[in-house]
Length: 187
Image (tube, rainbow, N blue to C red; front, side, top):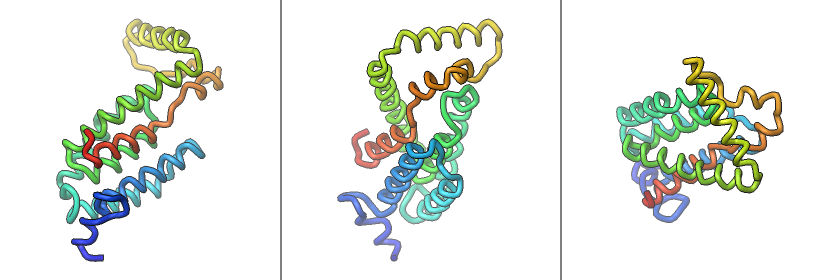
C-alpha cells in the first residue's frame, strides 16, 4: 500500500486509513474491556507500533506522537494512582496519543472526560445511588485531607464488590467516542 493511499481514502467516509485504523483499534480495545475487564498489553503495544509507524507519513510525526504519548501518561498517571482510572485506560490513551498531535489529543481527552462524566451521571441516575456515591466521595476526600496522604479511591468499596462493580464505567468507551468526535471534526 502506498503512502498516499494510507493517508487518504479510508474505511469510513472522509477518514484516512490511518484514522480508520485508530478507530478500529479503539473499538477492539473497548470490546475487550467490556468482555474481560482487561485490554491485552500485546494488543496495545501493536497499536502503539502501528501509530508510531504511521505517524511518520500520515500523522503528526514521531516527535509530536511521542510528546502526545508522554502527555497522556503524565496527565493520567495520578488518576491511576488514586484508582480513578485503570492501567488499561491509561495505556489506551497513550496509544491514542501516538496517532494525534498534542492539540488533537488534548481535545480528545477533554471530550472523553465529558462523555465519561455524562455516562457516570446517567449510571448514577439509573442505579439510584447518587446520594450514596456522593457520601463515599465526601468520605474519601475528608480522609485524604485528614491524613494528608492519597489513598486508593474505592478501596473501602472492594469489600462491597457489588457496589464497586455496579458503579464502574468502562472508560475505553468515552475514549472511543471522544476520538471519533475529534477525528470527525466535531470538537
